[in-house]
Each structure stands twice: as structure tokens, then as C-alpha cells.
Length: 115
Length: 111
Image 1 (cartoon, each protein chain N blue to C red):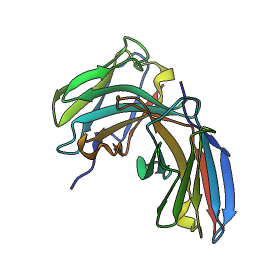
Image 2 (image 1 turned 180 degrees about the horizontal axis):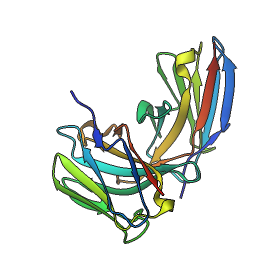
Image 3 (image 1 turned 60 degrees about the horizontal axis):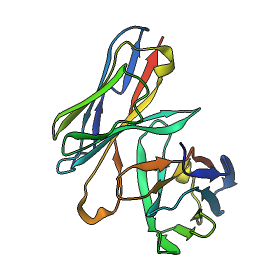
């Protein structure tokens, strides 16, 4: 089975531009998470969805960040306008509730550089 | 806020030696998980230990949990160069599904 798929793997953009990161979770997983990883702050949970509904977006840093999950197989994280401090690796992860093992399955990440 | 904090931040050992990494956390938890991250890759789940368990094994991995001290350790026995990676602990609590990660231990296994 395919794992969590993220695109793009690398994105370089200029300050002020809109950035859209995409994620396809593992089929059948009903939870989807967006994390951000930086050297300074480590892994931070931005937002998570259950059955396509946002449950907790308390980690979203600013109104410039927004996330959507229009269906069970697709989610986007958008930054508009982007700033240099948004440079980080953004991870999408998914999991199932069955068995309540808690294991998260991560994608390979999208490395964002804002110049 | 960060829940788990790993110690040490970096560890360098020779192939064949054992590697021990520690994790401390602040509040009560339901379970604690360990993940590995190879450079430039996503995190991979290694093992989960529940709050009512004290020790768990999986292959060359041994995890302990001391809820009275709010700490956990991950032992990798007979390390290999391929074990070189960052290792993170993550804690889950309550009925929600949020996992909080520490900043990780960078393990380097020299051949």
C-alpha cells in the first residue's frame, strides 16, 4: 500500500507569495495531521482533522495559515502571504482509530524555503 | 508546548555498542511512543508503550516507562550504522489524538 504522499517535496518561493502544500493520507485513515519541523522549535502540531473535519487548529501560528480537507483522500495547507520565518519542513501524517494504537504514519515532508 | 524532552541531544557510538536515549515528560499520559527519522525523511514509528506497562521489547529495541518519574528510555542493542538517525519520543494523553514530540536525540553509529 502507498504511504502518506506529500507534494511538493521542495518549494522555494519569495516572501509574499502564496504556498500550497498537499497531502494524500493512507486510504482508510480517518485522522490527518499537519506538523511543522524546525531546528529551533522541533515538531509542532499545526492542525488535525477527523473524518475531514478540523478538530483542533490551535497550533496554526497565524491567520496566514489555513488548512482544508475537502475529502478523505486530500488535504492542503496554505500559507498566504508567506514569510521567511515560515521556512521549515511541513509533514502530513495520518492514522486510524481502529485498535487505538496511536501510531502515526508520516509522509516524507515538504521542505519550504521562503526567501 | 513541548511535552517530551529527549536526552542526550546527540550521541555518538561505535557499531556493536548499545545506545540509550531518555525522554522526560511533564504531565500524565496515556501512552508514549518512539519514532525514528532518517536525514531528510519522514518519521517512522518504532514502538508504543502504554501508561500501565513498564517495559516493552521489539527486536533490538527495549523501551521502559517510569510513570512515577515521568520518564522513558529507549535502548538499541548491538547498534548498526543503519541505526544512525534522530529518535523522538512522543506522548499522547486524554481522549484526544494529539501527539506531542520532543526535539529528539541525534544518534550517530560509526562503522
